[in-house]
Image (cartoon, rainbow, N blue to C red; front, side):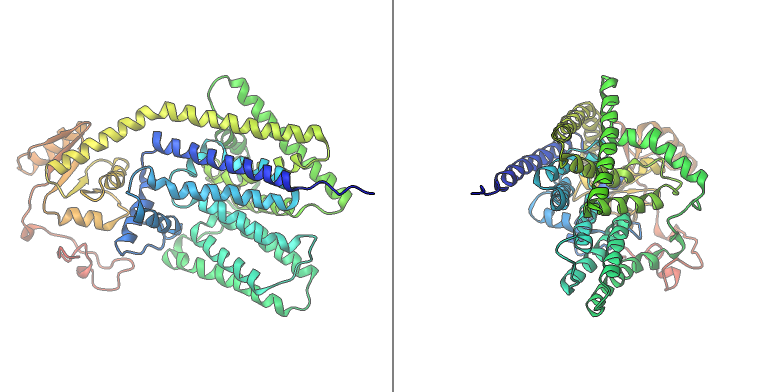
Length: 533
């Protein structure tokens, strides 16, 4: 009598238990970073401020001041602020939750082809990544973890197109899900394009293999329609800024420059840490290169023996190829490592899954050992970095707290940062930390017009400047024959009450036209001198 095959239930339960522990660890690590060192920057202060605007009845479509990067993160954050107070930690809960969902999506994607334990090894990569990926899935920068999650969901929905069994059958439900996900993804972040390209190639391959009957395929025309609808508002807002992805003309020189930057700068900052000893980082780098090489060899041999690569392999390769075509010709490709988070994480996850599913036991054990090594390596690096960056983060928070308390004590309802454009970035940070009052605005370009208007029409406005700039401000007052008002110290800043200038001697030089303003320029809120607007 033939004994029954061993049940896979214990293996699946083990994988689920370890996955749950990994999710808890990933959440704890990110919350630790948020608590120890998260101080809002200009970019990470804007999404929570938009969330507060949403709760106040204003509806943002894109990242404030831009015509791209959809406001999904801010809408999700608004739901959080309905039940939790606005703090520098609670504003990280949405990106952290999306990061955990990204981990789950990675597990689900690779489990279909490699099984639960190899998929678990793959999921450990986004759960415990290097510094760049860890930070951009902790702080709210406008939609990075949401993009990674949506990308994996697109690949999950595209997998049935090329799965060997069961044969693909087009359905309206599948088409609708892909269309909705396509529209949402393009609205959130155009970095989703490589994932969309891979899904589109898989769909075209399925159409080529199963061309008839064609009628069920008509539902999939909703996908390009959704893409057009998602992209149209971005195009209409700034048609002059829409450029093709091949910014450098796809010249060999541009590509070579980008590849050199990738090797010398980007990968090192993306995957490796700098704590001693240096030999450890060299070993990790060699291990990662060996991992990818071994996975490539296994995938090639699998294709030769089975005459077909796994659907996961095909989709990963298509995504990486589409990314390379749009990334390497870009002139900024060598200076922004965060744009490499999605493809490198996907590549390493696939490599671990491929090696962990190998028929050779030593290679499987080596893959699992490397996955655990990466967890320990990146966790230690993150905790060490948090410890080193905590003192300057606390110092910045203390400085901002002194400014906010001084402004409140002096009764100022709106403050204009009179420093440089870069120093003016602190206005958005101060506004968020001071919620609900006072408001802080930048003397230069401010992403929230109402903050500048609040200072313009404020009852008790003030200037904010670095203390070292006070002699220049005093000189400006002297040049206008005005006495310098009493100065409030809030080291390293000073607060200066804004002098009251009678409205009848104020003059504005009206422009002939104002972009995107069809009415006469005098009716624009900047020029109508009406406090209500």
